[in-house]
Length: 188
Image (cartoon, rainbow, N blue to C red):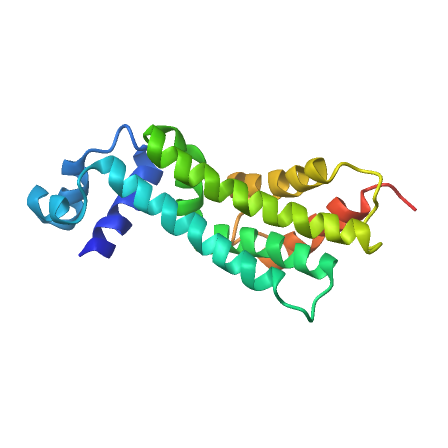
């Protein structure tokens, strides 16, 4: 039932927004009582926190797996991370939209936990980019922090425009995005 409550919350938060969704809306959608909701969650905000945690922890786990893969180059790992983010939007678009759009509704303690995990994801990517700069795969005349934020900004914003049923697949979008990010759009 906890998973069903989370799924209903995700659907309603994405459609109506966190503020406009009530606990009553969630339980009405499931045909259960508020008592059922409160058995699993203390509040609507706790449900939102669980959605955020599940989203960012899955990203961190997948990022770790990619970074630790010794068979791939740094460029391939950056591609895999960008692809993971875009693919995740295809598979979990609602959660991605909630993660970016509804974070402002978390209380201070919950927000701190999410921001720490989000920053860890950014820091891990920056370490990877710095390694690519040291080993000669990437230019070393750019600030690694700006390179990292540029990659993340492009990939994370794709939740706004990427259409899973569009002309290009998530893999093709990631491939083109990484090519633009790493090679630019200037004609050689």
